[in-house]
Length: 351
Image (tube, rainbow, N blue to C red; front, side, top):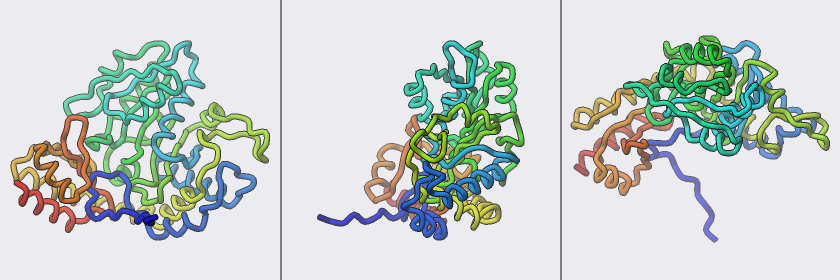
């Protein structure tokens, strides 16, 4: 039997995950056997998880955060819908969101039997509060906004969505799974300190440089966690608010190590490099006659012809498309200027 060899990131241009920071990798290995799902037995990793939640609160403008380290953005988004459904006074709860939301909300709606209503985005691919308002009714439990969309890196108008949620007597969730470690170094208004946000997704295992799996679910109020909690009669702890039971201590420890090493200056430096790389490759593609969506965060979408896309994948480039078929380049920490120059050289060779 051939032993599997991990893939390198040398030609990965569309992933929202990256190489873990060396300190995060080492911490993950040290805590492989621990289970944060049993916090009384595994007390050291439980303390680390509390530290991570505090750090994530600092990143997202929340002084007294509640939450936990999830498996990823999907779990955190499901939990946001679940908490809103459980807390809402609605006979038939629904969720109103822009059509640019992550597909995990479709999973949440199916699993939780909640009506998901999506509104068209505006001309800049951001949530349109007026279009969303048309879908709101007395059973709306949750309004969703995205701070760093998966396909175009757009940041929705979170304060306006907070006003919409307040008018609807609904909760507001912000999905900042990818953008949460870039946005602190921009002028965007997106977090708990900018608006009346109730819950947020932010993933250390993306731009946060933690090992997979290390997502993040944050809540403004302890009542949100109470709405998620179930009794755990055979454990020393009396209840559990997470979606999964047994969880990886590796993700918790790696998130703690990455945050300790990088917040805030290391993340700021990484963002500056990523933004410069995104601007460079966007300009290089535009110079070659390719229609490019102007990058807001370090994510570039470009209308590359299908034959060129296929030729580049045949040369080993790991690429992905938007729903409309555009090439997506995500300038993660492993994406260097040298990689992008090589990519553009290959593009020229394939034309």
